[in-house]
Length: 239
Image (cartoon, rainbow, N blue to C red):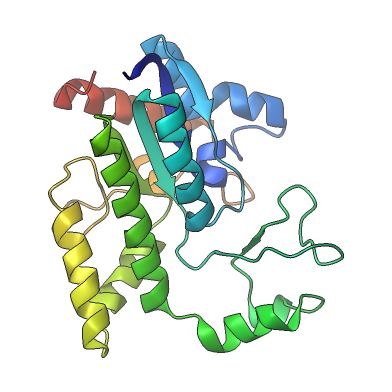
């Protein structure tokens, strides 16, 4: 049975609320998930973390959907290029979030294990990152569908759509076929946004592009997102 009192949200810094205010506690109080949950009379369960890769978002979401069985879930996917490296001190790039390397560039990898440099220089590819993200989206969709949870999925910026176009025209035929198969399934879900054939939707675009000095959505953006989701809930009769 779904929990009629929980709104579940996961994502990276955008969903976390970074940029809403200089003070972290106020970010949490004024981010879109809190505004929306207050409006709906729900309990906010926001598991977003700054710097998150889509692997972390998916892994946590699959467990949480089963555990909380929320009335509604909202997933804001991060940049497909973000990658997890699980290593121990002294290689923590961030003491608070030790398992997220993020969008590292080869020029900024000094001090990291050699495996990290090898990955970013030789092993990673746009096609692989897109397929991984689509795989995560499918897994979340299947889990949510299996327990009848409406699940809104969108991306934090346009990076996904740009890279997706590259993957669809990849010289690797197996990649093109796999990506097309994933998209065909996702296309049946009207709550999945940012895939070909639909109006472009991302957190940044829907929020109006209002960013703070660190490039994160400000309070005005979060208020717009909250209103957009509220209208979507009413339009689709999700609750």
